[in-house]
Length: 423
Image (cartoon, rainbow, N blue to C red; front, side):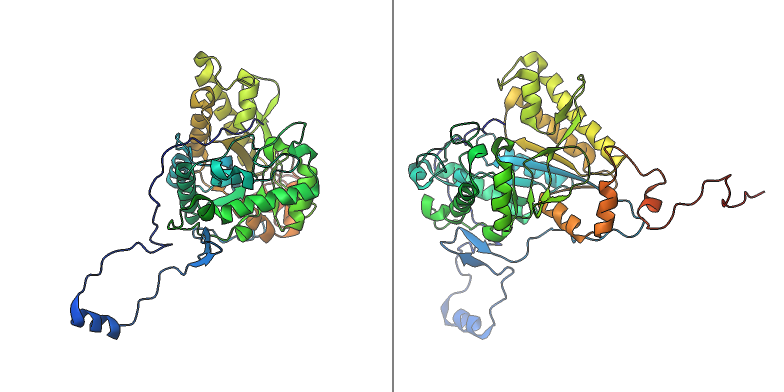
């Protein structure tokens, strides 16, 4: 996976005030002794949300996250829903405004998503030396840093996304890939250090930017952060060990098939998946970068005459993977992307069309990884074992009711033991 693009720079903007999180100063509407006496006599109204600032006020505890569905255990014989997970690596708001755009797309199509934040997107360029990347010199990052404008814009989107029920995960910090100190060479201790720094940049963005009057992020990141995807899908072995020790609940750094997930080393293993690749004999990973590499190579702006075709290939490949699961084993479809403009933005168009096509279908739930693991944890382990026994695209031969009921399937008509035919 290539490093995500650097956040665009810009001028300083005014801090955003969110009424549900931080009071916006307004003038009083009463004057004189009578008004003051009246205010004294009346009890103060209870606040709609209790906000408890954490540390320097960059984050805050505001209670349970809104719009999270309550996970329910499947009833005997009940067909599982079709889960679809859209996730974004290195989530940040820049001049393309793709973070805000896909928030809108999600809301319009009954979906929530997972945004994997790069911690350095909340660290201003002039404070870059605060980052001490494992196996690299201080202030080094392969995706750069940010400025006050970009940080303010990104914080606003993170705040709104969480309030809408989306998940904020992590894509760590410097996005180092390959040899020479890439994440594939990091130790467990290196990963723990990197995770600690990613959390720290989220917890101290106000101090590091000087924007102390801005509204906080409405969550405790130590509790919110339960999963991640590693840069370039490298370093998974040691990352998982570190993540388990730190209380993470899932990892999505692997490559797999469209089958029901299981736990590895105490974490839910939720890999990106292989789906059909229209026009080719091989299958393709469910990520924009991988489609691009197999279409235009490592150049992000290939032949303009092929942009539409390439986007259609990604869209149709994801839809074929969806249908294979929806009509087959109902395994969750896991899709990963970046906020990018590769090949004229054709992959962003493809993802949007997939969201619009699948997320409003019957029995489909477009959810975050957090919501998926909540659901998985609520299921009967015996039911999950049965689901994992189904192969790619394989629906139960006797139907879902018989397969998950725990009862023997009815005998087919015309054989001994079958009900007599009515005359």
